[in-house]
Picture 1 (tube, rainbow, N blue to C red):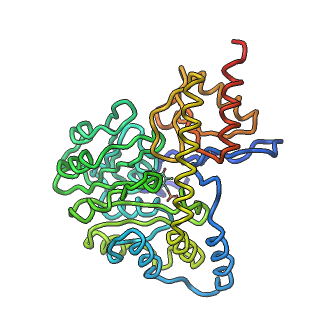
Picture 2 (cartoon, helix red, strand yellow):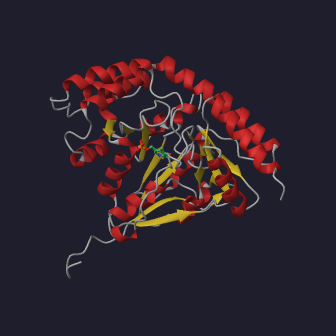
Length: 362
Ligand SMILES: *Cc1c(COP(=O)(O)O)cnc(C)c1O
């Protein structure tokens, strides 16, 4: 590189994000359980809306996302003026870092927290700081102890990925109370829809002026490929984030699909129920095979093996059976594999393959 041409501080610290693998060379009957996608895809209604929206791709999309925000507000009982939509919740995380953190500032999250927090912090030259977890669960005391006057953002995914664990409303409120004056608590609710009766932290956003919630259409709504997420925040924060949001960040297809998806509550309900049923079945079946997991609140389980070697060997074994799961070494959990809850046949295949792996002569 020509002398003097240098990226901004922090950029070269970013390790490229590796998405879940989706193919196995020379194998056709492959099941992808590595990215926490909805095994049933988007609903029929949403697919029809996408086909229709495709007819008007010569038109620029809405810039204020009024219709999608109204739909989200209506379904979740929220204030549309405090909603911002982004290219996945990843973009909302990026906006928050761009707007509120820079060189000399700290972005705090937990030991096994989502990798995007670290990447987004580095991208703006801020310093990522990790707090310890307790038994693969967010530890509010450790987070509070890690806060300094330079802490600007505190990210907690609840439920967390890849652990699947979550902490209660009182603990979250205690965290919001205890962080420094100039810091924002960001509750990442990517898996909130999988938790019956949970608002993702929306009520806390409304009750306070230092809490933001992020949500996504990539998980239960089955729209990961379209890239739509949203944030719920106090109005002054929304006003800040909208200044850095590109005017046409979401395509008209993405906007129409997300609106139809959030309104299709019967489908969401059905997917949640099926996930709950198969998650319980798979977790119990694996535990009986000597592969325990913490009670998961998401659409995946974090299967624990004796050690990293066994996890690695099981991953390779599953791959030979056409089953792709996620290694979690990058999340400091090298002895675990994160397995998305697929449909019933996929879950049965996983359990059968892990059984066969365990029964192999040593
Ligand atoms: C999958 C996931 C997201 C979603 O990201 P999108 O950009 O909306 O696809 C956000 N946070 C966590 C913790 C996730 O696991």
